[in-house]
Image (cartoon, rainbow, N blue to C red; front, side, top):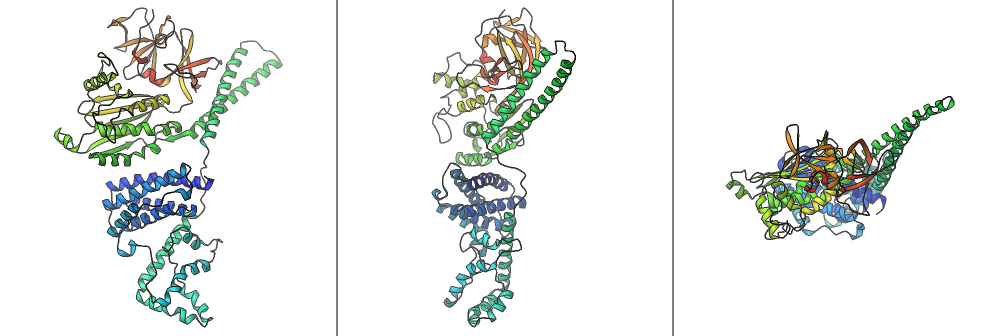
Length: 634
C-alpha cells in the first residue's frame, strides 16, 4: 500500500468508527443536530478521499448516505429507524472496505457495493426525503435536438471554469471525485452573453435556455446556489491545514522506548558507582573533577528520565479508542438474541499503553458476548424476576495508582457457584473437592473447554473464549477477578499496568534470589513474628485487626526453604501476607519478557541499578494468592 492510500485508510477508519458511535447516539436522541451534522461530514470526508484514491464502491456508498443525511440534517425529513439501519449498514460496508485495504488488498480487488445496501439506502432516501433529494441532480427534460448540448454542458463548464485566485480549479477537482451525473455546474449567463454575440450559431444553441429558465426559475436558482455551496464545502475540506501531529511507525516508537529505558538503566548504574567512589577521599584537582563528574551525572540522569517519560507519553492511548467499537456490537448481538440491552461507557479518556489497547479488543469482545448470552436474561425472564425489561451492561475504566482498572458489569442473573462446580466435575476439569470457595468456583469459567451451555449457539457455548481472556490479560502482566451475586449480576475486573516496559517495583530477596514485586499490589511491609496463629493448618497473622493468611514466596516459587521474617501485605481480591527474607528498596525497572523459557510465577527479567539480574514476579500470580499454595518456612 502506498503512503497516500495508507494515510487515507488510517484517517477514514477513525472516521468510520466515530460514525457508528454517532449513529447509535442518534437512536437515543434523533433530534441532535450536532450529531446529524457530524455523520454527514464524516461520510462527506470519506467520499472525497475515496474519490481521489479511485475507490468507486466507497464513493457510491458514501454518496448515497450523504444524500440521506443531507435531508435529515436540513430538516427535510425526520430521523427514522430505517434511516439509522441503512446508515449503520453503510458504515459497516465502509469499514469492511477499509479493513480489506489495511490488510493489503489493492483498490481494484475490492468488492462493489452490494445491491442490498443500495436498496436500503435508496428506500431510506425515498421514504424520508422529498422527490428532488431522492436521486442525483439531472438536467431538465428537453426536446431531442437539445439533448446533445445539455449532455456536453458539464464537461464544457469544467474545462472553461478555469483556476481561481489561488491557481486551482476547485470546481473541476470537485467533479473529479464524485460519481458521474451527480453534479451540473451552474450556468453563467452574464459571461456567456458576449460570447454568444460573436458566433452566428449562438442564437440556435441558446434558444432552449429561456424555455428551461422559464419552467422553474426559482428551482434553478436554488439548484445553482446548492451546487455552489457543495463546491465551496469541498474547497474548504481540501484546503491545507496546519499539521499538529505526525504519524510514526509503532516499531520506531518501541525502539525509542527501549533506548530510553536502557539510558535510564545506565544512568542509575553510574549513580551507584559514583556513590561508591565518593567513599574515597579526593584532594586537589581530583576533588574538582569528582565534583564536576557528580554534577554531570546528575544532569544526565535527569535528562534520561525526561526522555523516558516523553517516550512513554507517545505510546499512551485512551481506552476510548477501544471502547467506541463496542456499542454497535452489543446492539447487534442483543437484537440477534432477542434481548433489550443498553451499554454505558465511562472513563474512555483513561490512558494506557497502546500495546494493551490493541491486545484487549478480542478479550473484551469475548466478555461482552458472554455477558449478553449467559448473563443477561430475556425481557420476559427479567419481568418475571421483578426486574426492568431492559438490561444494562457497563464498561468502566479508571487509573488506580500505577494500574488501570477496566470493569465490565451486568445486572443479569449472576453466576451459581454450585452449578459451576458440578459442570466442571462433569467435564473432568476438577475433582469432587475442587474449587471449594465461591471465588474459586467463579474462576472455573477461565478453564479451557469450560462452558455451562448445553447446546452451542452462534454466540457462545463451545468452551472457548474466556480462557483466551485470562491468557491475554496475563500476557500483558495483568490480572482478572470475578465477583458475582446470584440474581443480581456479575462483575469482571481487569487490572493492568499503565505501561508495559517500565514498572515500579519493590525489590525483595528470598532463598538467595533477587526478585521484584509490582508496586500495584503492595500495600505495606510488616515484621513477621517467630510464631503464628494457625487456622485450618495454615499460618495466619492479624493485620490492622483482620486475620490474613501468610504465604511463603520461596515456597510458592519452588525455592529452598529459608527464614522469611519480613511480610508484604498484598492487595489481592483475597488479601494475604507474602513472606520474604528481606526488602531491598524500590525501583522503576525496564522489564524484558521471558520468551525462551516459561517459569510459573515469573513474568520477566530486569537489571537492578547495581547491574544484578532481577526476576519479576507476575501480577496475576500475586493476585491469585500465589496459586493458593503454601506454608511459611520456619
